[in-house]
Amino acid sequence: MSPDISAGLNKKIAELAARYPKKEAALLPVLHLVQRERGLITAEEEKLVAGLLGLKPIRVREVVTFYTMFYQLPMGKYHIQVCTNLTCTLMGGEKLIDYLQKKLGTKIGATTADRRFTLSEVECLGACEQAPCMMVNFDYYGNLDKEKIDAILKDLD
Amino acid sequence: MSGVEDKVLTQNFGLENLYKVDVYLQQGGYQALKKALKEMTPGQVMEEVKKAGLRGRGGAGFPAGMKWSFVPHKVDQPKLLCVNADEGEPGTFKDRYILSHNPHLLIEGIVIAAFAVGIHTAYIYIRGEYEAVAQRLEAAIAEAYQKSFLGKNILERGFELDLFVHRGAGAYICGEETALLESLEGKRGHPRLKPPFPASVGLFQCPTVINNVETLANVPFIIGKGARWFLDHGLPRDGGTRIFGVSGPVVRPGIYELPVGTSLREIIFSHAGGLKPGKKLKAVIPGGMSAPILRADEIDIKMDCESLAAAGSMLGSAAIIVIDEETPILDVLLKVAKFYSHESCGQCTPCRIGTSWIYKIIKRLMAGDGERGDVDELVRLASNIKGKTLCPMGDAAAMPVISLTQKFRTELESSLKNQ
Image (tube, rainbow over all chains, first blue to last red):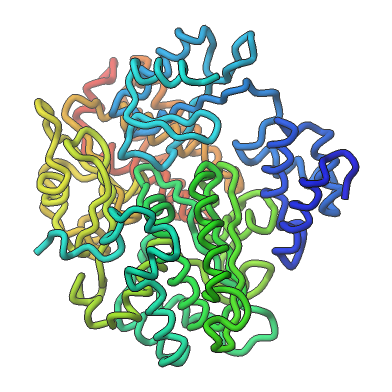
């Protein structure tokens, strides 16, 4: 239990830890949950998670820095990840990321000044039949072209 | 020989709400589990799967029944099952279809496999990006517990199994089975030295079976309809169907479930509709990005593990990436090199250094600064990764570089400025 996170999250973490013979095995799922509540994983969250799972904070950092889905810097409200792996490139994905850079006025890996969008390149998302594809937070979008991207961004609040 | 009647795993994918247990039950779901638990011994289940020639659908193509039989019978520790739903091999998306359209088929396969091996805890390791799919899977698992297909005393036969979903966090290497185990234990995805193999020392140091989603989704059909029936859908040593994923500039990209051994030409030109108007075929990657490439004149080949191995490639995850004439081979090479240099876990020096070295050379070639000897250098570097790493990712990174440079050497050399 930690007083620094919500009661609901404490309960979920306890449930997760009980699924494994060693509670440290819950590290990845717990980091996902904490990131959802806090938005990112800084040294503070690392310490928090380490305390919950009985680990040294450095063990948590080892893991956070290995996996691409844990964010160590603040992200925009919408994280746009465009696949630029082989199939998506064959289908025009690189042109789309250029288009997004111009449209949003930001570079790959950067966040817009209003903190609305972070733009990233991502490796294969496992949706090659809909190439070119992208993710906005956890939503998948496929068969993209410039017009479709315009419509998707317009629909975001 | 192929058509709708050949579909096994995907036959009901068109049904609305198939992912719900009631609809699955209406289609005869969980009958194979009942048969296994009520009419068969664990040994008989394992024998049937062995006889069916079910080969792993994740990439390596190892016979699944044999893998199960490597787990020692009597041990003090619990035995465990890990389902590999990491699906990271570029070009591959078949498991996403199974997981989202028919999660109960996978769950049924898992329970039967666990019964055969004597396993009471199983984990599904699913790639982090598949969040919506993971939620659907969690809901299906909850339904299966309610209906007594999971939990204590399954179908009142005294068999017990707990099943949990475990989400990854964006690392290709975690699809490698021992990296998957490390990741599931809450660590970096660094592959382990083998032996010991997971069947004897796996997750939490316990004997562990690791199977791909599609592999397990075949098990209910093998038990329900028999090994003979299954073999009739494929080849004598490679039974059943495969879910081929076709992507790239074809008329109808998507999944095509067809008998093992269907010709690559038929899959691309009949099922996927051939290339888009005005485009010509240049090359095909037949089994996910790490499979050595085939030229357009090499596609009259049967899509099964042994035929592709004989042609110097591999069936891998049966993910077919179609490349058209307009695409420069250097572009393909750049994508391959970038991917593996990004995804190398960093543990073994040949892979960590070699993949980024290869990527740097290819970027230089792209910039027009290629020199005589660069192509040989790429082959030399790739050859120094292959077979010199703990896990198969070294080979996966090296093989496409070697095959692309061998098969398209003239084209690559013509892009060098000082020939």
